[in-house]
Image 1: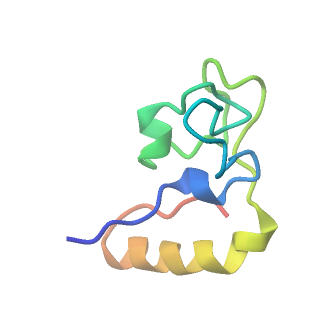
Image 2: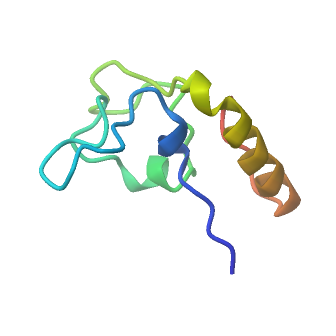
Length: 81
């Protein structure tokens, strides 16, 4: 089985070191499952998103391209870039 990182890790609004008591994301207090799983790319409004949408963290562009290549090979929809 292969586990791919969630799209949220590549977003400029994601706070990877927020800790257990902090929000992981500037858009959501708790990231909705359908966004975290990548079922929804969050490039359009979503209830409770505080007006923020997915915006690529430019420092992670190459890593996201690699993940998207794997997603395509697995028959999955690529994440937004």
